Length: 376
Image 1 (cartoon, rainbow, N blue to C red):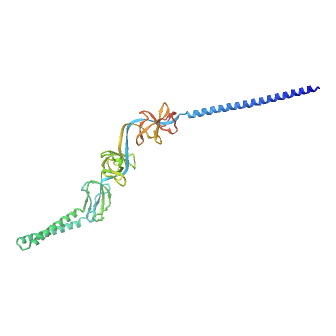
Image 2 (image 1 turned 180 degrees about the vertical axis):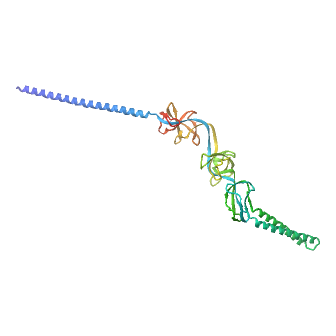
């Protein structure tokens, strides 16, 4: 075979090999690109599904509870704690010595002024009265004789004066003996209630020994202490709200009766005497109470529940519901009383504010409002 024919065939085979390789590369490249495209499409499709799921979760309405902005009265207070005590309370003590023969009252007994509480054996005191009566009669006889003798100048003026002095002294002794006899009957110094009984029937007592504690429950007073700056605008007769610390639902009214004219230099406070006005029967002397002195009252104020106000440092805001969408709205807060807060700027009467569930809310978030029972 000619040499040129051999080289020609070799060239043809090489060309075919190169072409075949190129075609193989093109095929592999096309497959890879196709695979990548499919993967990209799959990834994009998965992302779309995930995004839809994510978007759907974010757009699901949040469940919230709401309350209407109301118009009403709200007050500010100065608050302090104190014990309610009987204004008139005394220790009834024995003023005579002897054995108790009659005990007529118990703790809790209501007594009237002058009523007998206890009787001490009066025998010794009665004997003292009888002796004093004899002494007075004897002194009067001596004085009568002395006056007769003095008229006849049988005794000196000095002796006559002594007889008169002895008669007066005997009369005074009788008066004192009779007074001591009355002290064997212990009576109530004023009308009130026996709060403590310390004496027993048959007990021997001495003058000055405590027998009872007597208190007048009308009125009951609380003495509270407030900082000077909080007292400047107060006045006697001003309303005070009282509540038992043991049961805060038991509330009643009081009034300022007295304001001390001086400031305690040690504490910087002023003593305020508060009188309870017709307290419930369950309120006893010694009860621990919270006294809230009304300092300011604002009528026709816009009020929302305290739970509706979200505070961030010095700022405050609420979420207002508009067409099932929560709108975050900045507000200005006024007076606060119990679970109510006055809003001076930012809301209108009748608007619905979120009171529960606002922790996860954002501005313009869709919401689903629960009814009064908590159902959606």
